[in-house]
Image (cartoon, rainbow, N blue to C red; front, top):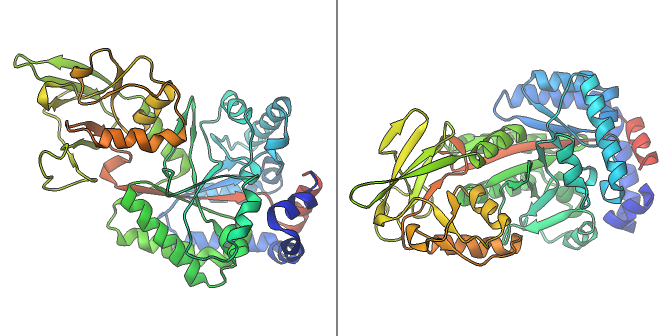
Length: 434
């Protein structure tokens, strides 16, 4: 597919003509605008948010000083391909070569990267395995879309469904997913491109209102708000990001603001949790858990005791009854262990999902040893997640859980930016090599 065909397919015929003028306007004096963005971030964020800049390796080679400056300011850099090409249309062999060249270039400029976002958020069944074999710890190509409250441009979303992997917030969790050795961190939509070009939102106040509304919704659900923007539109959304940072502060420090790599490190530490059981003389169980530092342990009351100070839903904080070195002991009431039992026939994907949600899960053939025993789910996909989680929440026995975010934060917030061009010539080279 040529770049022109790509634009017509994803933007529409009329929008394709408009886009030509927009590109000229966005990238004219592009380096100066990029430096202005850096100055704005230095003045207004001041360490309040760490942005992960996903940049193509070929662009890094031409503009390394810009990204070194961003790193010095505390922001992070990740890979966005070698050039801005559609990975979905590349063979496994071609993708391996793209990843090799990409990693080599970042290494040349002493900017090793741990994350990779596919250009156009587009990938195929080989991509994840190629990224894992290439040593990448995280990827971020799937979008969870919240309704913006603006009906304009809704029809244009259909044009990108064939390109992006889009789910909707009503039926999808806005949380990382463990995929073997690579973490998939979803993006929150709508991003700046959708709001400005598809929904045709022209007022900065409306953009800020949309994003702040999503911030409150993800906070209520205990999930992640992952804001994506593109630097060439920064002059139109910079003030909106500033407003979001102010909204974060207004929530009394209850949101964990982190980079994508920090989220990855935290999530993987939760997945590595280990435990053992101790049977007491009175027949009750203690569950000894090796907790990552900063972990908040919570337990469902099972509806039996109204929580005096609820942490999340009917979960309350629980403190260990004993500590030994890095192990913490939690008492499991009702004569059952603190773990969810899983039948041997349950899929690995179901187990991974429950672990991602912070539950202690173990294979078992003794249902009565656990507050909840899960059978079935011989196969498991995203459409089964809500059903399984609802089954856990219906349990009448207290269930121990390790909360999603560190330091007792209710939700999390991160920002990333996709950078494939700084100047007009960068964009021309990108289009030619599409």
